[in-house]
Length: 83
Image (cartoon, rainbow, N blue to C red; front, side):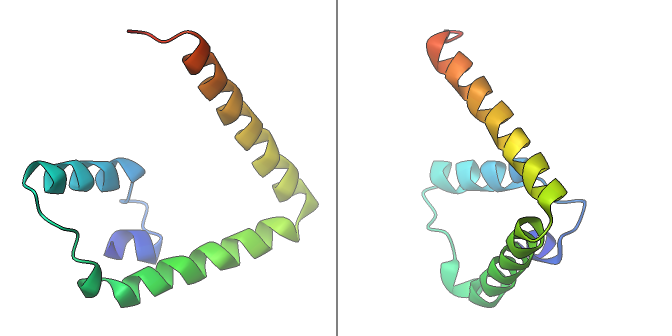
């Protein structure tokens, strides 16, 4: 959570997925009470990032293109499951 909040390049969404899976396997509830301040930092960084993108037409177009690409990949996966 600290790496995520600080914007560290050492953080990856895979880290969150791995942690979530490990906690589910061990039947441990996430310690939300221990990360409230960190979560607020993440939310503020996210808000700042969104505002920056919205106020920059090129960045907004790039974000929209990336989202469209991801949606198309998801559609293809749903239409042609691999298992």
